[in-house]
Amino acid sequence: MKRTAFFLSDGTGITAEALGNSLLAQFETITFERVTVPYVDDREKARELVNRINRAAEQDGQRPLVFDTIVDSTVRDEIALAEAFMIDIFGTFLKPLEEELSSSSSYSVGKSHSISNESNYEQRIHAVNFALDNDDGARTRYYDEADIIMVGASRSGKTPTCLYLALQYGVKAANYPITEDDMDDQDLPHCLKPHRHKLFGLTIDPERLATIRNERRPNSRYASVRQCAFEIEEIEAMYRRQRIHYLDTTAYSVEEIATRIMVMTGIERNR
Amino acid sequence: MKRTAFFLSDGTGITAEALGNSLLAQFETITFERVTVPYVDDREKARELVNRINRAAEQDGQRPLVFDTIVDSTVRDEIALAEAFMIDIFGTFLKPLEEELSSSSSYSVGKSHSISNESNYEQRIHAVNFALDNDDGARTRYYDEADIIMVGASRSGKTPTCLYLALQYGVKAANYPITEDDMDDQDLPHCLKPHRHKLFGLTIDPERLATIRNERRPNSRYASVRQCAFEIEEIEAMYRRQRIHYLDTTAYSVEEIATRIMVMTGIERNR
Image 1 (cartoon, rainbow over the protein chains, first blue to last red):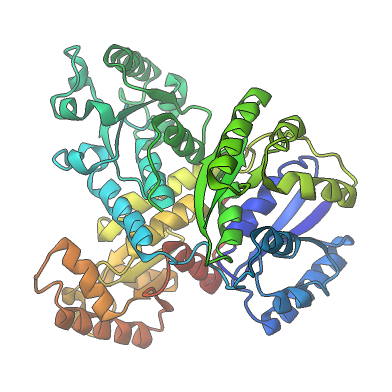
Image 2 (image 1 turned 180 degrees about the vertical axis):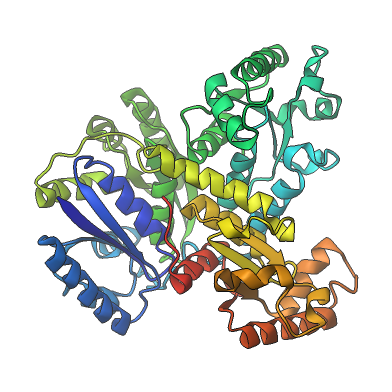
């Protein structure tokens, strides 16, 4: 049985999608066809959408689910005419919030993912550039500016994590790959020593690491389970010896890795 | 007057934060102190949190707002004991959804940002790697694999947009900077010709571009308003001549640019 779920917004749709997906994830036995429609910001677009929702209802033989974060109540009123089951965020929560805050809402649209605070937004874009410029040990002389320096084996998840920390939280994250050269002596790589308090380690199951590396360089020594196991063992020993906080990324998405690091380190978000 | 707002989750907290921020954005006259607490996944953590919320209530002289996306109702029941105004997503919407779907929810935690669908997750990480490897015209021989090729002046927002498209939607986005060399003849750069249907242009207000470039290379010819105006004029003329769809990024956040491109191009999300 298929149900269609619409995620509607007058902004980017990112919030409606996140919310809808987290609710739908609770119903594993049902197959959902997901449709995101952002920028539904006038009544004409809303009326077109009502037709689309009604067509889906007819095709499915079931009314669609509609998750909406549309602020403008005149647009919402149009959507409400559709043959659908509505999960209406602003309709549900805005009035009680107004009462609690003894304040009228401004009914302004698409605020949460727009550039509402210019300097915070710029910090996020700066942080993205910082992550790119200081990726993979490319430069080490700007580590003074970093909020965090991610270390770990090649392909353990450092780069996507740094980019996510930058985009989502405006955190300046550099990363440095620990290679065999760094394992010869028992010490921290020289360029990391002055920044020990900013280091955060990633580790990963060696078999999983081998799978990931095989996509890059199939059947290489670099991608062998044996080599991965050796590197991970050495690197985890270094983390323990140097008392570097670390996280096993094997079962985690980049969102989970990033948010767990935020909790473990207590870094402030810049947004 | 300050109010404290807590964003609570048993997962990453990303959904609770997005939802809470979009509601709070409607109350511009009130200053909110925002606290995100992810991974509240057992009753003991919930009880500690109740103390923290109650302390905030005492300090503010007002009860805090609590936005929560905690799935486990026994954990939510603990949180409900706090001196707070609750916006409880699962408590509000799960029961009506269960009735609509004639199905019990699985009450599983933190699904929406975990690796619930491994192959989709891998597509997102592949897309991030693709964006990095094909950034800034670094390589052009993999454009066959790209879902979209972003073009535009240096610093018009191509790279953050490509990364966001990859992380959020699993879209493989390459980018190619249009430079003065490409403006000499009236034609498309040679390497882009076979991929005309995948091209998407960014443009930006020349003064804004000059500001951004000045942060990189202060007082250079590259960062002069005159040079920026020249490039933007030439590039927009190229877009029109070659019938390339394009977007002015001046007033938009990376989230807005990315979601608008998704709408304008109709690219499918891989997640």
